[in-house]
Amino acid sequence: MSILDIVLYSLIGLLVIVLVVCLAIANYAGSNLVAIFEKYEKYNADFFDTFTLAKNISFGEFNGNVKVRTTSGFLTDYYSNGTIYLSGRVANASNISAFSVCAHELGHAMQYRDEPKKMRKFAKKIRLANVLSKFTLPLLVVGIVCIFFNIIIAITILSLSVIMFLIGLATKLSTIKIEKEASENGIKLLQKYANFDENQVKYAKKVLSAAKLTYIASFLKSMLKWTMLVNKYDFY
Image (cartoon, rainbow, N blue to C red):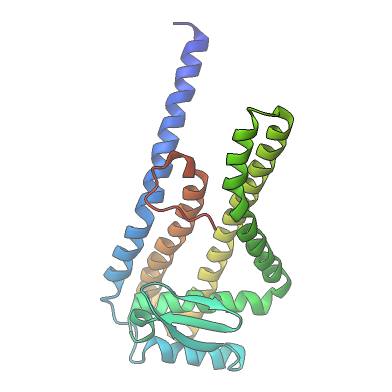
């Protein structure tokens, strides 16, 4: 076996290892978040519920300008246009997991308050990615078909599809950073308004770390869609 063969097989082996690791993370993150949430759901946080905590933080940090609403589903909490939406097991609870999720969403509110230009730019990137996602796969199919008729047109269309795909991946990657910052803000809010002690902060960080892994997994799922091995495809 030549040195070239050894190098080639080594690269293939490395690629397979990386692929397996990425697929494992992508398929594991969701179930891990649920398990971590349920684990720390058993730890009481304080005497008031999460909805009340959110109201207190709204008045203390945002002069009452951040509204609090409930939404259906499990772990479907989100922030949008000056309102945080809390799912039932979060809004009506008083435990580490619920407080952590709520604080994370309020962390997004802090981002829009402190860095409005940055967040508006990010929101535009998300909208652009959502539009492009509708054309990425159709263009790929059209490009492949055009190979049999006109190679130049085919290359052009395939290039557009690849560019759109890369824009989507870049948006996913920037989302991870945004979510990380929101969690950091959330921890500060828990320390200030929920009086979390050292152990409670440690548990809250574990919940938010599990949530962060889902965003990493979402990026990996987008990147590895072509393998058809991820348990759920979530591009944008």
